[in-house]
Image (cartoon, rainbow, N blue to C red; front, top):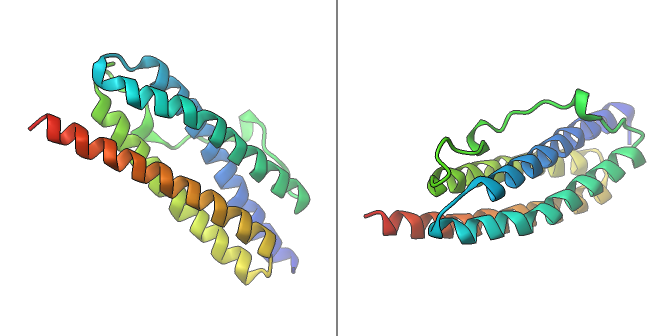
Length: 156
């Protein structure tokens, strides 16, 4: 693989690594801060997803290293998930659900970019890794779309 393609792939992997770590922070905050009967399943789901998101970050970091990239520390990371911040009201389950869906959609799109770049750069290992992670993110999005449909049907 030529150096330019490798650098592009590493930059995209680094962006995904950053996003996974930010998701962990926000899932943790939301899973602890929500209150109320309607929040239990959301809190449980977010709490369970923490380990999977950490696993994604670990896999991405390992791949970055294998491709001779630099794994960023906390001061090199940038936070951008505005829609997944803990809500002002601890009872606002719907905004958390929508934030999760938004974050998962962004992750799915980013992983597709990485897959495309990896295929162009003749890096099937990265393409395979990101295809698997993309599938996990699609599953999370589907789960939270179901929670949103239920929450919206209850508020009618």
